[in-house]
Image (cartoon, rainbow, N blue to C red; front, side, top):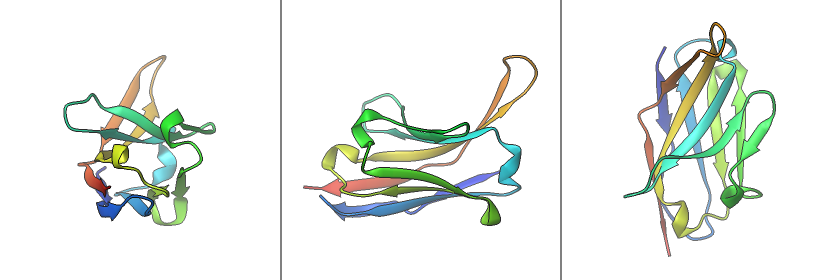
Length: 117
């Protein structure tokens, strides 16, 4: 299974972008999916997750929406009202529950989002 993230780019403050993460296989096999981001010089952080409900980082609540389209095996992140502090490389990740507390994670390659002020 491979994850292919796309949709990043350069946008002005207040603009919108939609990120996509195409999964080469059935997306229904995963117990959860998420978007992370990593800004230059900072640790990777969770942006939004889906699976047993949706969760968002406080910094993106009300502006970002995570969704899954099972028909085309794609995870999306709709980003509205973008701010310069949203500038980062965005990564998608899948999660599968194995035996006990074991988890299997797969990562996409990342897509760069740059928000200009």
